[in-house]
Length: 189
Image (cartoon, rainbow, N blue to C red; front, side, top):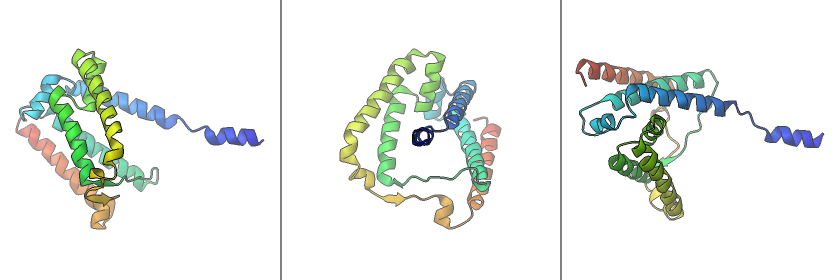
């Protein structure tokens, strides 16, 4: 009897992994259909001549924000806010920015471009992700108690910071993002 209990305690529900895989495939498909896996579109965004990537990401942000807080309000999920700091954001931005500038892809678009069979993403992107991850892992013990702790702002969200109901922040943010998306379309950006 004790053996069965131990087995059931260690056997976890794998459904969330399959949901994650399914949503990841769907997101990759939508990135592809939106053109965000093409080098020229990414570089156009960096040069501020093609706002396709920004529109895709803002659409994802507003959809995700509403979906997450809707599920939270129904009690379906509980948010686990991770602490942050200015130092973490600076290091993350540097790693992300250098990779983005050198190759013209971000991690999500690299995965989509690999799915499209683009050689630059397969060779440069995959190598860059592995190399960047390895460098960060090697440096992490030296960084974790130094620069990564600088400007620690803890486990905070805008609703917590403002001490208001989540929807007081979510609704105006969603409206602002949707208005921006309409403005981009109207301006032909």
